[in-house]
Amino acid sequence: MLTKLVSRWHHHQSQNTARPAYLLIADIIADGINSGEFQPRDRLPPLRELAIQLSLNYTTVTRGYAEATRRGLIDSRRGLGSYIRGKVPAVPLSGGSSYEMTMNSPIEPGEELAQAISQGAINLFSQKNILGLLRYQDFGGQADDKAMAKVWLEKQLPSVNMDEILIAPGIHSALVGLLTLLCRKGGSVCVSDLIYPGLKAIASQLNITLQSLPCDEDGPLPRVFEYQCQTGNISALYINPTIQNPTTLTLPLRRREALADVAARYSIPVIEDEAYAALATQHIASFSELIPELTWYITGMSKCFGPGLRTAFIKGPGKHQTQLLAGALRALNVMASPITNALASQWINDGTADRVLQSVRAESVIRQKMASEILKEFTFRATPQGFHLWLLLPRHFDWNPAEMAVRLRELGVSAVSSAAFCTDNNPPDALRICLGGSWSREMCAENLQTIAHVMRNPLHFGSVIL
Picture (tube, rainbow, N blue to C red):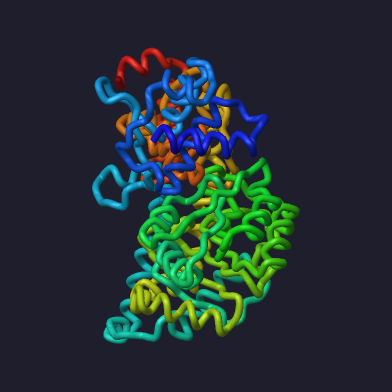
């Protein structure tokens, strides 16, 4: 282990002469983990021994190990010393009552809309041939289903060809199919440094490498994306450009154009995950509009209607490519549920889906105003029409975000640590807070007050949770 660290140290030092030494130590540990060279439970050399080998003082190496610990890369135990923890895990895809507390659930509609939803379902099953919905169907949806999907897609896109539409059993399933298709010959997927945790789980399951792109206030850096295209085997760019999960960032047009330009010059397919796009009131040209010949546009109803409605609408980059994806998805899922498709069609066609969308959007604005008042002394990022926020933890509190998220969930707050979203093994001190789900507006306010109390009283909080 000592020899490996020293070798990586000299390599990194030659490329990052201005980077502080203690950060480089954490960086080389992260790189060793990502490459598979460092395995969980591998012992790290003692601090003093490493300091001598790297010609650094003891304090610098101590800070380096502390930084690696903060990133969740290493741990230490009395009698064992310091050892590798392994890659930051994805959110476990398991059931249980605590699972919903890690999900970004939309705000549930009130009683009047709930009755309209029920009535729509009753109308459907009283008029529809139920046996027809229980039969096998062609993958991608029947003609009526695709017509419904076209209506929903054209809320965000100017015009959609029916030959380029597929219906899948949820955005997550669509992503599984796309990564299976686009990475079938190998290659990595470029992603932001913080992404939807489900994509991390999918990539891990399919043994696909995610290449993390550093971001600024406008999103992933185009120059780094281009560098990856030049030097790596890149199969796709995954992007969540509107009300991004978890940071709430919406990429401005200039950044979309810059990334689209790189993708076009290197013929890199783009997976455009627009799970939250329907919530936004301002339209910004999508990647599907900028480079339609390369973009897979995905949206659905789980974030603007309800997560139990597992249906996703895909607009492909052409008829042939769309048929290839249909084959991949058919192998994985056989077909999307005809009953689910029929329900989605019913609620879109009778106007209920639009009413629910408007309700989620309006209530999100109210809850975000509550958050801006209750949490006004703290730093967070949010979008008025979104139902989550990105809470930045003060560094001087010296809290572990993962531990804090666990404790907040125990207090009834839907909080997820930055580690769940991180792709570069350097998670920021931040939490995603969900303002939606089945909680009432009053309960949401109580949860925000709980967060504020914890943030104002770190010592008391520590005494409660440790």
